[in-house]
Image (cartoon, rainbow, N blue to C red; front, side, top):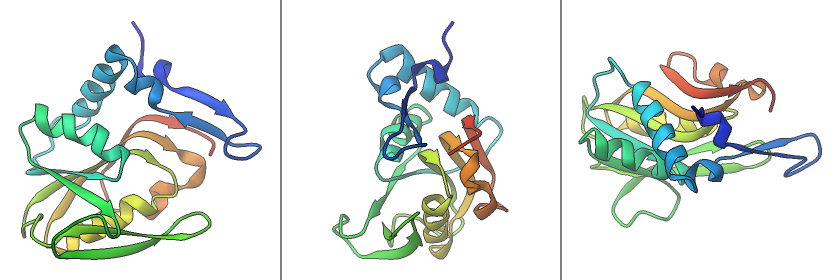
Length: 174
């Protein structure tokens, strides 16, 4: 029986020499791989009480939507700046060589809601942290941060200390 990591395509020296890019499209393009990944991510939520699934743009949408659907939970998109049509709050965060901004609709998270935050990857932790800060500013509580992959060499867990972080696959490097 195949494991989720069997569907990940590793591409050496992309986007620069010395980096191994972990391409999840191998999971997405295979019905068995996609089903396995979603089922395994849902297992990471065993025993966690939550009200809402929030996905980080854009691969967090791809993975978060089927999880929300299968568990009959609402799905909230956390988007890049300028993509949401109603009143938003925003949070800036650092990328490796730049800055970025995430936004969420003001009314999408209610005070006291327990939220699961989903994305494909934890690298430096900045995107997850910014998403969590948005949810917390609206009065929600992030009860779990779930990712398909983790690049442990980039120390994202350090930035996410205090959060319940779970990943399916952890690669030791970056």
